[in-house]
Length: 250
Picture 1 (cartoon, rainbow, N blue to C red):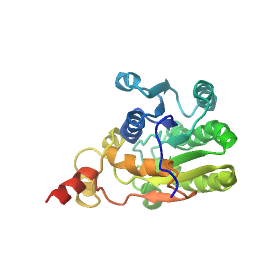
Picture 2: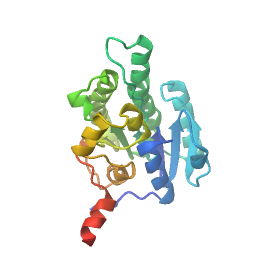
Picture 3: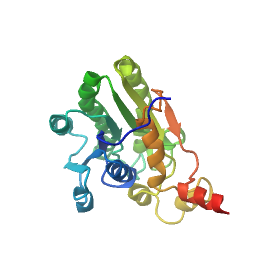
Picture 4: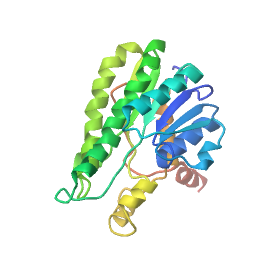
């Protein structure tokens, strides 16, 4: 088997890394000796002061800004090993009430932001013939939900984009995969699903995972052990390591 993902010395760009899954992954990369470059519109002081975390306040919908930051990263570290594009917005609005600006903002962040980030990191990866890109989709992309049309559309578009990009760079040493993390208790999920109602539904059915529950699957996709490209890794149910440990102890 090829070597597992070695965070030591690895440079991982994480968009949307200031909170939720991106934050958990950034801290894990830093704790394992890697460098997590966090691109977000707002970065907490906690992350800014964490060794191994390099924050950059960037709106991922701004292509020029994303490219400039990644070029600075390559100039500073000589490479980008991986990209995890997790930046997203999820407003709740019906189609009939949705303003043009709101629709365009969702697509600009959730879809354009993915494209710009991929474009920015690819030159470094292709030059070294090595790299891993992980994008995010959602169960809502397949089933939809009231007041989530823009978000569902953006996440649905991510999959064919990832598969197309994977085909383009497969012969250049770069892997592109997608993760569907399931229902995760992030600040964004909490804002879109207030207490009661749908939140209770998720608790009764699939369960709600934590951002830390997604770190392991993400590290696998970043690792050389993930010998695939153009694939989708799906977490259907919330089943955290802590609950697994409790089960073994019984």
